[in-house]
Image (cartoon, rainbow, N blue to C red; front, top):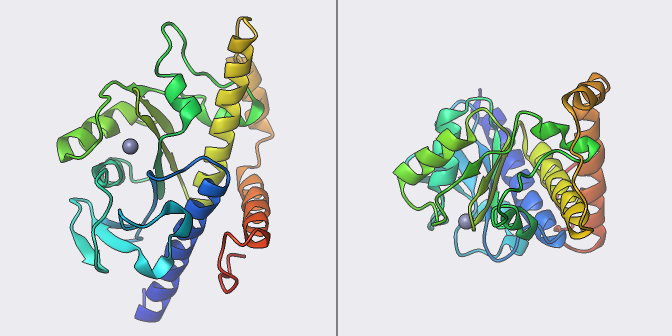
Length: 246
Ligand SMILES: [Zn+2]
């Protein structure tokens, strides 16, 4: 890749990750902590915001390029303390291009209930057909060994709950990650509503999920929702007027 092409690709990834972070705050899926990252193509590195920067005001030019051991390669400042989550997942999962770690309340609630397993309930939750494992360590992921343990528990899946702590989601792009976060929350809410109604949840069956998958148009769906949220956020003043995210 030429230097110019490289800087275009990097600029776009920084912009998408910054926008996704702001949008997730707007949607109350991210708050004072948690982070979105994007893998740098062709390098053992990723872009992530600085730990001290508000998630509601992440700026692309302030994001850091960090290697899988957490060393800052580009930019000045410190990455978030839970950076090993990102590095160890990128190291273990070559298919993953973007990672979200957050402390989504509904996700946490499903780590606090005896005998209840969060399962795909709504149609879009087929994304998690292979399972939603729970990482049992309730402490913050500050060490490489903790990141490795989380990556092991995540395995080949697209989401991992973290006991009494939060959630980690992985996806093939930053827009797809944003869309998955929205649907993860919707699905957890649906299951919680059933439980709060005192009824037995009826998760999607394997046959139903196969039926949904036959008609799945993930790329189209991701594009549609990314456009919706980018426009909503721009109209609300959440994104900077000169950010071109089309
Ligand atoms: Zn955390």
